[in-house]
Each structure stands twice: as C-alpha cells, then as structure tokens.
Length: 166
Image (tube, rainbow, N blue to C red; front, side):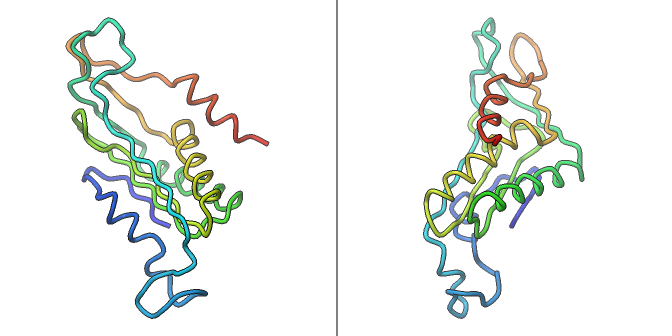
C-alpha cells in the first residue's frame, strides 16, 4: 500500500502500473513480473476546477491552496485504506494527495485500487475517495477575483460517505 501527501505531481499511469509490484514472491507471481492475481485496477483522479461553489464570482477559480495536518493526515489515510481492505478483497492500493499551491487543471488526488475482480476494485476505490473527502484532515482555500475563501464541507460528501455505513 502506498500513501503519500506531497507537493509534486504524480503520473497516473506509472502509479497504476506499480500496483502489485514489489510485493515479494507471493501466489500467482513470476520472478520480476509483479503479481499475476490482479485482474482489475480502478482509479480516480481529482483535479482543480476552474469553477467553484461561489456563485457570485463570474471569474472562477484562479488557484487553490491545500493544507493538511502532517502525520495525522497520513494516519487517517492509512486507516481508510485498512477499512477498505477489511470490506473488499484489495490486493494493493495507492493514495496520493497533493498539498500546496495548485492551478486549475492540476491534479489534486489519486486513488487507485488493485483487486482480483472489478467489483471489489470499483467499490474500494469509491469508498476510499468518499471517506477521504470526509475523514482526512485537508483544508482547501480557493483563490478568486472576489477574494480567497476556505471551502466548507459539503453535505453531498457526507451523504456519499454515509452510504457505506452498515
């Protein structure tokens, strides 16, 4: 499992290709070929939008600042992945979340999940993203021509996360 909070951008294709690599010589693996029991990889990439939630700002978003609580953030992300692994047959997972100054069109977050079957990969990926939005300590400030403002939690994110409660 890979969890990273970083300022640098990420390469979606390289990160997805790395899932299941370097796990040792487990079941279904050939020497140097990575895991052969992975039948599905589901991923989600979130990007900075040019339009935000401020309806009175016709100019849109010119940038975004993402902040986090170091140490606590990585721990929260690890707990989310651990919970996903307990619910679905996850072989490997990657979460990369960027922090710092970002411009419209730039990547913010990558969630990628490898599993034997697509159902587990899709469900675990969606679960991780829904929980990341509501349980991980990140704060976003949007920069607009109307001024900078912190982005409030959304009820739609809470509803998305609530659907996973038993």
